[in-house]
Image 1: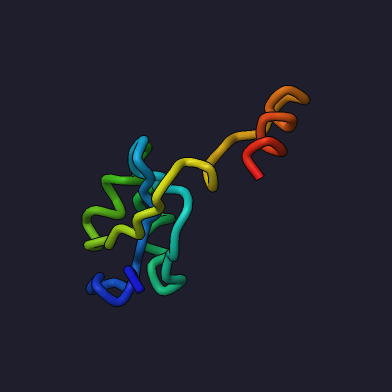
Image 2: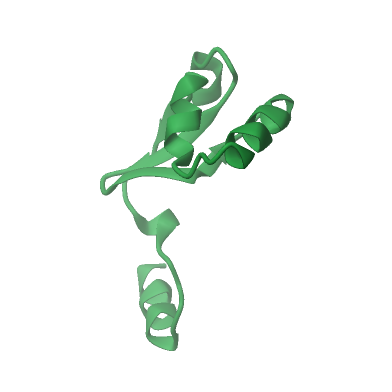
Length: 81
């Protein structure tokens, strides 16, 4: 498991198209630290996760991160199944 490789127990998803920092395992023990960073003006979450040694959980393709916003996207998602 990727989180076991991180000193903070944090792991973020990555796919061939790049990092998916909003998908991952985020230890609740770091919630106040994250809150402080956001209130302090942080806007790039990957900068904060890097400070905590986040590990990477590799996904073989982008299917898990496909964004469905329209009926056409939903049709495409169904086709991916």
